[in-house]
Figure 1 (cartoon, rainbow, N blue to C red):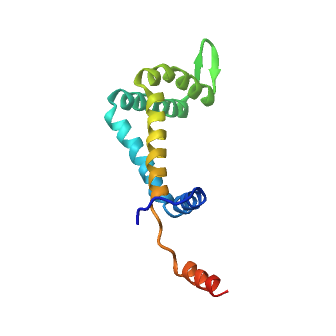
Figure 2 (cartoon, rainbow, N blue to C red):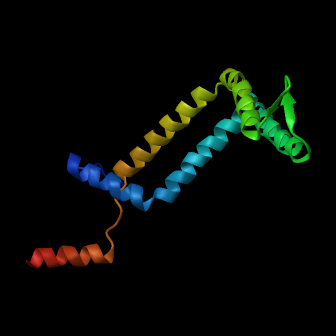
Figure 3 (spheres, one colour):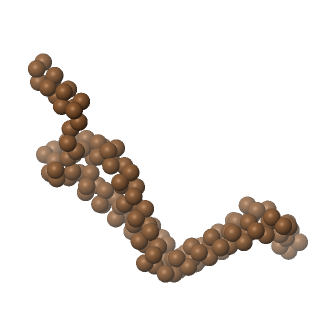
Length: 136
């Protein structure tokens, strides 16, 4: 089932066909790489937990009363923006940018390798169409 395509047009049609056919599998590979990176980077895991915990605290605090900073009432959107801005240095120190590019690069490499080399067996409709075209 794994064959090197003989020409570039066959390669591109095979990639398009395989991406359509194996789309859910490729998404699972992508999610698996995300989970792997988060679990193997403790500092990134702590940064994500801190961000999500802060957002949860904002949600709880705004149910009971409005929050004011320096005499100005802050909307929920402003509070989330403030937490996000404060989280950027933590994510930078945790190496989140490197993780994102590693996940994108590894996913692209493995998905394109599989999509290029794997030849999906033709369906019965494609075989019938091939027979009809050979007769004509």
